[in-house]
Length: 196
Image 1 (cartoon, rainbow, N blue to C red):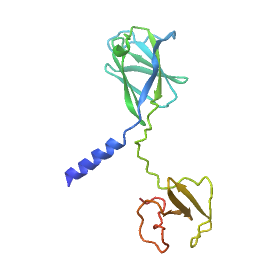
Image 2 (image 1 turned 45 degrees about the vertical axis):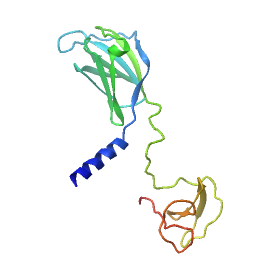
Image 3 (image 1 turned 90 degrees about the vertical axis):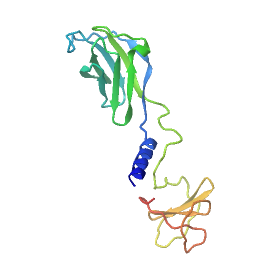
Image 4 (image 1 turned 90 degrees about the horizontal axis):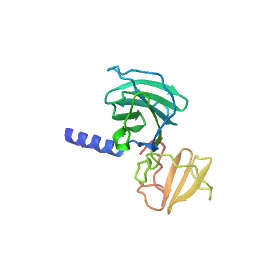
């Protein structure tokens, strides 16, 4: 039983991967002048201007982030001049690891580099699982479908499957989709919002 639960949890976590962050363009040297900040070894720090439309970013580095200042549209992150890696975190995205040597950059005291962080464009792929039990509102009402106790009903076709609904429930009319038995031929059992 334990193995089944572990396999189930691992499968669920693999399917629910977070979207990724990415660096827009490349790191650019900035003309911004910064205050003199010292790291734990008393070396004068370098800084990275991180611009992003994503709020509440957090930062980490191998030798530690010395100081983070909020700026308009971003952050000013002070790092040791020996630092090689900057990691950027957000609760809604996978962490982004920026390795400076991979980008041809070596930090120096009082030097400032500028980067822009954006969500990866293909963060939402076709293979994403969407669990939405409520049908979207119909774009056009084709005809009225009589139902007991329903004041307003609608009918529309989704890829060869007719879907009718009203009064908080919807029904599958014809097409594929296993429903239970119903009093009306060709109509499956109602599916109520919030049920699988």
